[in-house]
Every structure is written in structure tokens, then in C-alpha cells.
Image 1 (cartoon, rainbow, N blue to C red):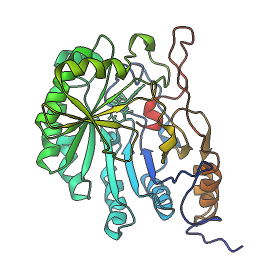
Image 2 (image 1 turned 90 degrees about the vertical axis):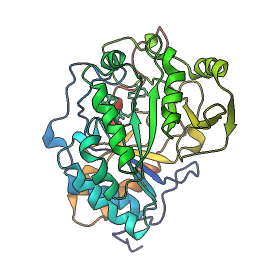
Image 3 (image 1 turned 180 degrees about the vertical axis):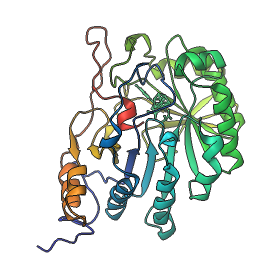
Image 4 (image 1 turned 45 degrees about the vertical axis):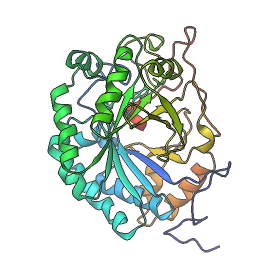
Length: 342
Ligand code: SAM
Ligand code: SF4
């Protein structure tokens, strides 16, 4: 069979062994960050040597190879994607796929700290919606969670995003004893600005300084408590991700729940994750991975790369199996969320 270098040995869209269509790629462009959130990193992290990173040109080539294979949505994440040097170059380069219609959405997940500087330029590259992580409205709690973050700077970032016309979604990790009493306020804050809010359970990824059993708060409890303050109605709204949404009667806004720990959402998983060193993870909750850097660098055309992508997709597992309990204190997966990106 002749191999089309643009499409690989198999060609066409990426379908995994369980019939799921892989149409969503998340790309962590750096494992570095200007924050040290307690659930994500230890305070003294060892980061990858810069020489191991793919260049921005290589990231563009890799992402474009996935777009050639039917990926319709690209999310740039990290670490903090906006601390990667010259990151706008990548957004500008990838925006050509929006112009041709090959890509439906180019978006990012950010801690918001660099948005005052980049929001307008991101909008100019065709970014329409962004996820901003914000776990608290209290500057002191913010400092306690992020260790190094500046609350006022993130607020300015959210404002800059809104001013640039970006649709903001707020993501908050529910943390026992830290922000659990503030969730209703976060709902009012987000919905008051016309933003959706998505709540996330902590996942056991990577060693952190603390004990995760102290942080873990099941969203089933959060939801039950919110029902004292709000009327929550299930709605079929989906963003292509694992969140399940309700509409909050009192605010008219949408509230999403991402429950990797209490609810298995793997059946509809349409995504894979690429790290800044070119490693492809077929599941956030499993160690199995494929190296795409070697085939990328081995030749100037993409035939080897597409063959490696096909082989990787054929290994996409059915699902993950996270546990946080007091006996198994070790993380389910050794790598940090900042490596694979959220
Ligand atoms: N730095 C950016 C940010 O914070 O939005 C992007 C990367 S961060 C790893 C992506 C998302 O993962 C954030 O919303 C963060 O709260 C979440 N996250 C990090 N570690 C997590 C964990 N162990 N469990 C659940 N969510 C986590
Ligand atoms: Fe940085 Fe995001 Fe991890 Fe916080 S959650 S340490 S902002 S990568």
C-alpha cells in the first residue's frame, strides 16, 4: 500500500479500539509555571531540562499532523502555557487551521496571570473561549493555594480577557477545608460575569508536598450542599469535555461538574494529550504513552509520525481507575498534572 505522507499508513480520522473518535488534542507546551498550586506541584519542583523540549516549530508540526487526521479542537495548556517564551508564535501559526476550517476551536487553559499582557493578542489569533483556573475569591486563600500567585493580577487577567471579547470559563478545584465554604460565592462570581463555572475533584497525579486525602472533596457532597442555596437542574449542555452541567435557577448560569473520582466518564473520551517533549498520553489516568518526538525528528515528511500516531491510538485504553485512600498514599500516576496538562 502506498503511504500518503500527509495522512500516514492508515490515513483518515483517528478511531480507537473502542470506536471512539479522537477529535480533541490537549498540548502541554511547558511543564513550568509561575504558580505552585498545592494540589498540582510541590514547592520545589524539578522541571525538564530546556533542551528536552520540542521547539515551537516542532509543536506546530505535531499539532498540524493531528489536525490532518481529523482533530477539530486544540487546547494549549501546561504548566502555565503563557509563560513559554514566544508562545504567541504558536497561536499565530495554528490559527491558519481555523482560517481553513480544518480546526473548529483553538483554546487554552491558563492561571490568568499573563492575560493582561496576552488576552488581546490571543483574541486576534482566533481564540474565542478560554478556561481560567480560579479556586477562591479570597486573596489570602489564593496565596495559600497557589503559594506564589497574585490574586489581583489574575482578576486583571480575567478583566482583560473579557475586554478582548474572550468567553471565559472559570475552573475551580474543590478542596476540603480550603475553599469548600466558598463554592456558592464562586458560582455567583462566575455567573455574575456571564461565565460558566466548572468544579473539579482533585486527582492523584504526581507527588506533592501534602497528603491528598486531606484535599479530596467529592463533588457529590458539594452538589448536595449547593442545593441548599440554589435550584440545580440537569441540562444536556456539553463542551466536548467530561463536565456534566446543571443550570442554576437563581443565576441563570451554567455549572459543570468534573468527577473523575466519583463518576467514570471514560466512555465518551475523545481526547489524547501531548507533552512538551512530544510524549503522547492516550489517557490522563494511565502511565502508557507513545514517543512522537523520535519519529518527528527522524524525517522531514510525516509518514513515520503518522504511523506512530496510529500505533498510539490503537493502544488508547478503555478508561482510568483512580483511587485516593488512606492506605495507598502514593499517587495513581507519578507524573504531575503540569506535565500532561489539565
Ligand atoms: N496552569 C494552567 C491552569 O492552572 O489553568 C493550566 C495547567 S493546570 C495543570 C490545568 C488545570 O488542572 C487547572 O484547572 C488545575 O486546577 C487543574 N489541576 C492541577 N492539578 C490537579 C489535580 N491534581 N487534580 C485536579 N485538577 C488539577
Ligand atoms: Fe501552575 Fe496550573 Fe499547576 Fe497551578 S494548576 S501550579 S497554575 S500548572
